Image (cartoon, rainbow, N blue to C red; front, side, top):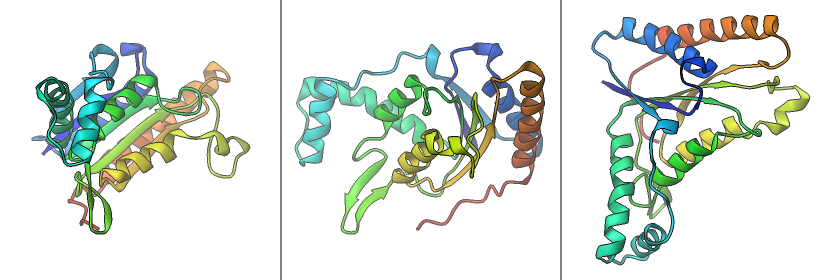
Amino acid sequence: MKLLHINASPRGDRSRTRTLAAAFLDTLQTRLPDLETEELDLFGTTLPEVTGAAVDAKYQIMQGDDPNAEHQVRWNEIKRYANHFLAADLYLISAPMWNFSVPYKLKQYIDVIVQPGLLFRAGPDGLEGLAKNKKMFCITSRGSDYSAGTYMQQFDFLEPYLRAIFGLAGITDVSFVNAQPMDYDKALMETTLGKAAEEARALAMGCDLAATPAV
């Protein structure tokens, strides 16, 4: 079994989400000694630009045409990242909330891989995700408290977005650990971080890792 850790923080070892991700992964590795893990550091990776020839290739494929040689080169770069994503069985996204949503490098990565014919396709019953039977775990940190029932909940575009976009790809089994609030004072931050670490460990120990039945 292979897990792909998509790290969307630019802070390296100072990252609070990366610290929580380590708590999750250490526990999961103890539970599954043979688990293969790989970290994709988005801020340390030069992702393809989805512009020009890549966009033209996308629309040619959507219309049933074959991209020309120039467009195919750009599309192959995108396809490589999508296939790399699909090769995993489990996913862990660790990301801070930026401006109520995801960091721009995570958005770029999503825009690279979520492409027609790669992560989804049009079928007789509508759009069909091509990453079915996979599970995703998301660890996020937020400056404020966006919990259900709070005033700030309306500004949480991070969790709904990740659920929606990866749901399009067929991943509907998505679990979240949200460390919040993190930016009020140091004592509260440390308490919040400790609580989130325990939640991350509990999730790793108790989650069902069996394949999710296709819908």
